[in-house]
Length: 94
Length: 94
Length: 94
Length: 94
Image (cartoon, rainbow over all chains, first blue to last red; front, side, top):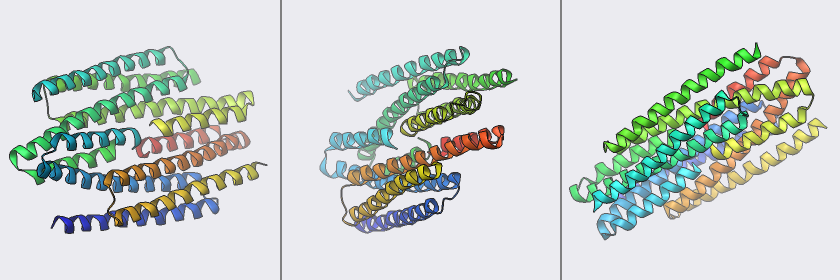
């Protein structure tokens, strides 16, 4: 059940990344065609938003795994620390 | 013990916010003195970085509370969902 | 005329910063009262959004100054380079 | 000369986007291989950083064009307004 749910979520994230890849190809074409810079920037910001969405999905899968691992293994403090490190990384890089 | 640890962490976050408040007062003075815009912007970006740090500390306290609540109450799915909602909010607003 | 317009814009930015300062004081109170972490985080993200708005206003004043300076002084390449450096700084820190 | 310089800069931005596209393909493979979520997130944040860099290059080309157009056409206020709109868009979406 959990594996199945994870698999379904993976498919969603892969779809987002496939879309992002297609948009980047489109932006490369826009640059080659010397299109208006503001339109190119708007498209770039849209891809960045898509990748942030993919990142949230990955993070959320990680949170779920950590919480369930904490319960199964009893290594609660370790799992909390692992999530806290990730949040610091996101703070600096999102 | 947990309460004490939370209290200590609150003190740290309050200290960051006090610093941020002082920096904002400094920036208001810079604007009144018609200082160089790039210097004002640099200071504003520094306060934003401080507030992101305070936000990570608050988020991390929330993660810890959620994980411990999940274990104590057994409402694992609810707590995971609560954290996932928060991540989506951060994705859009950080 | 230009000075007057700059003065009016400064007043707007100062008002935003005054609001941000008041919100930070409110957040400090929320932390002392041990309010719900998600509500505190929401308020922090709102202050960050306000400070980004203040930063855009400062940046826009700088762009205006640079463009007018480029025309008046003829140091076009220098002023373009100055704006480009600022954009790189924003990319890394916003 | 200006056209040549623009062409060179386009090549640099296209190279960044080609790298970003390759990294996204790598991330898709990581997801299919069920790799560690934190490693996937780190890679996603790296692609986002690359795309922000590409965006800054596009913005900087736009700034240069706007400043030169302002001088050539005399439509200084229009060009300043165009840049200010762009900054507001970046503030909300970067």
